[in-house]
Each structure stands twice: as C-alpha cells, then as structure tokens.
Amino acid sequence: MLGNHAVNPPVVLAPMAGITNVAFRRLCREQGGGVYVCEMITTRALVERIPKTLKMIAFAEDEGFRSLQLYGVDPDVTEAAVRMVGERDLADHVDLNFGCPVPKVTRRGGGSALPWRRKLFGRIVRQAVRAADAYGLPLTIKMRKGIDEDHLTYVEAGLTAQDAGVAAVALHARTAEQRYSGQADWDAIATLKQALDVPVLGNGDIWEGSDALRMVAHTGVDGVVVGRGCLGRPWLFADLEAAFTQGAGYRPVLPALGEVAKIMSRHAQLLVEALEDERHGCADFRKHVAWYLKGFPVGGDLRRSLAMISSLAELDDLLGKLDPAVPFPVESLGQPRGRVNAPGKVSLPHGWLDSRDDDTVPEGAETDESGG
Image (cartoon, rainbow, N blue to C red; front, side, top):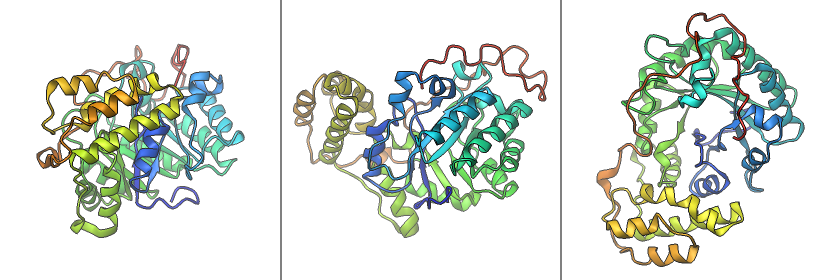
C-alpha cells in the first residue's frame, strides 16, 4: 500500500531521465499494473516554476495514480516543493531521490551522496514528510547502499526515514561508486528488510519476471523497482504481473519481430502526441531503437536508418522492411540492458566526508538547477 493505494502487482517503474515521460509510462501501463514514476524533478526548478519542469510533470488523464520523484539538497526548498505538489494537486505520491550516482548530482551533495550527511538527510526527509502529511500524500525514498563500500549508509538512512514517517523505502543495491556495473547486492536488500518495519522495495538486476520472484524469495521484500530491464521491453510489465499472479510457472512474453515493430510504432506515436511535434517526438524515439532490436538479426544499415528517423511515415516504412516472423532472441533474456559502465570515483563537494553531522546545505548545491 502507498497511502490508500493498493500496489498490485507490487511493481514500480523507476524514474529514468529522458525515458519515463508520459508516453513511455502509458506504453508500460498498457502492458501491466504497478506504479509508474515520472522522470526525476529538481525541487528548485519546481518551486521556481521553470516551464520545462512544469511540462515534465504532466500526467495523462487516465493515470489513476500519479507518482512524482523529487531531487533536492535543501530541506526548506524540498519542503516547499512537496507542499506545492499537495496544494496544486500535482501528484498522488512523492518519492525523494537519494540514489542518483551521476557526477553533476553527487558533486553538489545530492543523490546517493546525501545520506552520508545524516543530519541533513534527516532534516530533508522530516520536512518533506511533514509537508506531504498535510495533504495526505504518501512519501517514499529511494537510495543506494552508500557512496562506496567504505561509506555505507543504507541501514541507518532507512531507519532515519522510517522514524520520519515515510511510507516505504526502496534500495538500489549498488553503491554510487559502482554506478551500473557489477551485480546488485541482494543480501543488502535482505538486511534492510530485516531492519525496517515499513515496506521495503528492492531494485537491481530485475531483467525478467522470474528475477522479481527470486528477489522476493531471497530478500523478503514487499515489492520490486524496475529500471533498465524494461528499456525496449515494455512488455516486461506483463511478465511481472503474470509472475506475481501465477508464480514460477508463468509464461513470459516473447514477441516476434513483427509484434516488436508494432510496439515501436506505438511508442513513437505516443511520443509525438505527448510532445505535440512529430520531428521532436521521432528524434526522442531514436534512442530506443537499439534497445528494441537487441538480439534480433537486423542489418546494420537498417538499424542506422531507424535510429535517424524524422517522421512517423519514415519509421513505419522502415519497420515494414523487418521480417515479422523472426522469433524473439531468447539468448538475450536475463542480460543487462541500457547503461552498463565501469565503477568510478564518486564526485563529492570539498570536505564532504569530513563530518557526518554537518547539516548545512552545500554552497551552490541548487543554484544552476534549471530543469527536471
């Protein structure tokens, strides 16, 4: 449950920059149930009503449960942003991001760097919960294990968030240093679940519906968060719903290339409608082409042409050149999708690790945040 909303199946689409817009969320919702979170929004940009940000928080009329993730470093600005969400009825659920490992975020003390400053972290969560409670909004947090293996924070941060009154805690079981490399540490998720009384959601290496079942069995978590696994595979949510409904005997969706082509066309159409511009929508779709075609025997020239489309007619013409009978490449099942990078040193503000109890907002932490 998130507030009065029953999450069934217990699946959450992770916010992904440039991906989880209104078009992609609709495409995924057409496949199965769950909670579908919009792209991460900066608190400063929301409070200052930056036009680009206000467009990013648009939800479709048929989105029955609107989920919004906020990122911020200043407790007062975060509180104001959550209050704005409640006052203007912008969403039904607010999640706070403490898991982003991107340098432009961590070097300001945000994302996965922030829980190290435990007093600042506590202030942000408490003030956000206070603002959310005033409007009956369930507030959750998503975090990583810590900055690196020498600076783990997830259990302490989870307990702090629980004491502040959050509705649930999600853990991406990697450190910021790992980025998206290696394997997720599901044992850490189990440890957090054992430490908390509020619901815990697990994130990391959910590539198939069977992975979700294995994570639940291994960790005891209340639900799963899915990110890269659904890139080019929105039907993963049908698999997840079937897995949680039918158990290990469920039959995964394995669309032939012709069915994948139909979904690609649908995705592009939804992007054009959402962005109200055909060229812009088609340009935004280009990055999805490689994910959709992963593992399929499609020639390089056709792949390149599909990744350069500028109109829906051009896309449909090129999709018509695919052999619709080609079966789904089962050898690609269970394989990582999207970003797969090497570990890297985490960018942090000067002196960030010196004191865990400094609760001052880093200088310039949100001064140049101009968008979501």
